[in-house]
Length: 124
Image 1: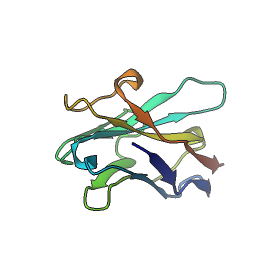
Image 2: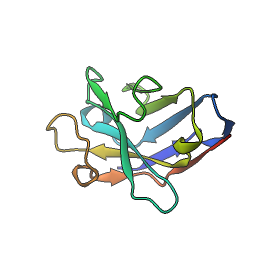
Image 3: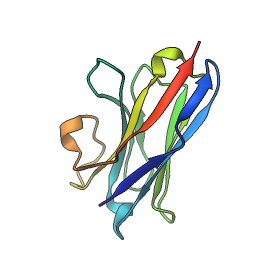
Image 4: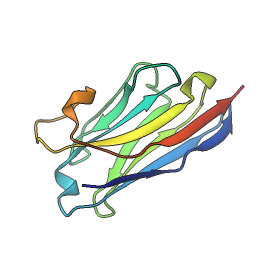
């Protein structure tokens, strides 16, 4: 499984960005997908995740109400819509795939494959 993120960049506080993660593999629709982020000097943290069908999702408290995860299984792509961005959202954002078919996953160790990351920088 290969995951390629895109859509990062520089944005002012209060602005929006949409990240995309394109996945290889015919069984994408079987994967739970997640987004994580890592700020300079900090550990990687969970942002949001979505079940294989897209019927259920969850997000970290720090982004609830601002970020939305979604997926298009016909396009093998998962998205992270980020609104009302804050400087503290600055980080490298990674998408990840969980192939274990055990429902939604929020912990880094539960994910099997990772993308290379895309930088998001929010200026104040």
